[in-house]
Amino acid sequence: QVQLQESGPGLVKPSQTLSLTCTVSGGSISSGSDYWSWIRQPAGKGLEWIGRINTFWSTNYNPSLKSRVAISIDTSKNQFFLKLNSVTAADTAVYYCARDSVVDGYLFFDSWGQGALVTVSS
Amino acid sequence: QSALTQEASVSGTVGQKVTLSCTGDSNNIGSYAVGWYQQISHGAPKTVMFGNSLPSGIPDRFSGSKSGTTASLTISGLQPEDEADYYCSTWDYSISARVFGGGTKLTVL
Image (cartoon, rainbow over the protein chains, first blue to last red):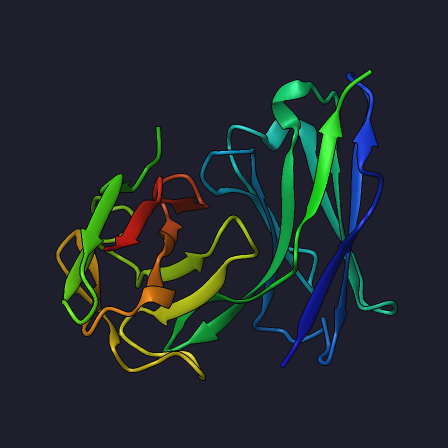
């Protein structure tokens, strides 16, 4: 069973860039059919998909965040990354990384990280 | 506002059968299978349904189905440990993005 673990600063100042790393263990991030996603959840609210990447660097982003988001991948380290720039307090949330894997011909999230709380505050 | 619509809350007693729904449109649920994700006490989400297939380790009292643009998660024989928030999600080809429902809070009375 693949495991995912988020890491990065827990506090980011307004207008700066939020950067997180997701480290994958127990499996290869280079599987051609998998996508690797970032999802966030503000306190007391629902899940919001941020974007995803695959081993071929094909990306998709949430249209509402697309202008501020970049997701990248390092297959040699079995890691993928999130950068969100020009952050505000509204970006304060628990950030999850997840694997999007093919089941019965469709993609589903099948493995999740534990989540990392990022607070935007001066 | 979420692209997929779920009930805000559903409740049931132990042993009862409950059904959670997730409504979208032809761009999302009408074209793709729907995943269901359980979140207990704001912990990490856990996958409980791949469309109508059960992930390994998930009890078979959980089942999934879809009709047109509405997907459903049914729990037969509700247990206290099923109390959680449940989210549905699928792909939306009109915006080339994943979408989530707003979540349903399931209370076991």
